[in-house]
Structure formats: structure tokens, C-alpha cells
Image (cartoon, rainbow, N blue to C red; front, side, top):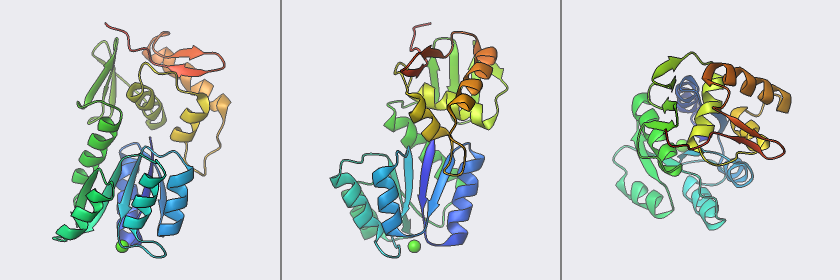
Length: 221
Ligand code: CA
């Protein structure tokens, strides 16, 4: 899961980044509206945390431009405490949820999890596919009810495939969502990661469709 954080106060953006990365998300951070608009328009993000008061281009304009261009990733807007006109404007502009500053990181995480699940069409914190289940609150993977030891990267990969279960996810899409801007985007590393996961989850948990991508089948148990 790859997230974009748009916030011009370094103290707040660092706190958000730390909380989201600790929860297993890959984060890009930007502090100005123009750069935010460009990134959201050209990169595939699973969610954006968007401050409204930004240099160069304000958050509402950024959001309206994304929506007008058909960019429909979930957007969580950050507003000042008690500023209800901002919240109304944000939702009118296409925000999926809002959070008033200051907020606790637990509340931020709960809203982020809920928005990502909703965007993927899952209302529940537990996603299952056959023997495999994913607890997005505890960030744990289970096989036939037994917890599996997984690294943060392994968890992120399984989480992405589980959120898109039943769909063949192309390798380039997985790589884009798994690794941040500074990581080497390496298809061989992805293949090695998948092989490790097959040992942990069972040989059929993740299918390879040669030339197309990877799939967690949405099989009935
Ligand atoms: Ca601001």
C-alpha cells in the first residue's frame, strides 16, 4: 500500500509518516500543493492524506483537479479544529473523510484503514480468501487460523493482493505499490519475495500467471 502525505508543517508530516510507516504503509511526502497535484495525477496511490492550507496551490484546488481528471483514490482531508466550513468544502470537493487537527495517530490509522478497505470493497477489518486471512487491524496473516510470521514487506505484499483478491495484479503494479521512490524496483526481488511467501502460506496461496502477474484466488473455502 503506497500513500501520499501532503502537509507543509514538518512536525505534523513527520508524525504522520512515522505512524503510517509503523503500520506497514509505504509513504511519499510532499509539502506543496503543486507537487502534490502532480504526484497524485501521475502516480498510483492507495490513499492520500491532504492538508488544506498549502503553499503554491491550496488543498481544495488540488483535490478538485484530481477529481475532475478522474483520479479517484481515497483522500483523507486534514482540517483545523472547529473549522466546519472547511470540512463541508472538503467533502464537496471530493474528500472521502476528514480529520480535525490535532488528532491522535490511532484515529488517523483507523480512518486510513477504513478508507482503504472501503475503496477495495471490504467493510470488515478481516479479509479472507480460502485458507488465507488478513487482519488489517493487527496487521497479521493467518493460514487456516494459524498466525504466520511475516516481515513488513511480506505483509504489505499479501495485504495488497488480498485487497485485490480474485484479480490478477501485474508485477509492475505490485512493485509500484510495495516500494517507495528510493527503493530499487526490481522484478527479481518481487519474485524472490513471492517464493518466500509460498513457503510460509502454502504453494497455492499466490498464483503466478506468466506474463500477466500474480493472483490470490478468491476461492470459496
Ligand atoms: Ca498547512
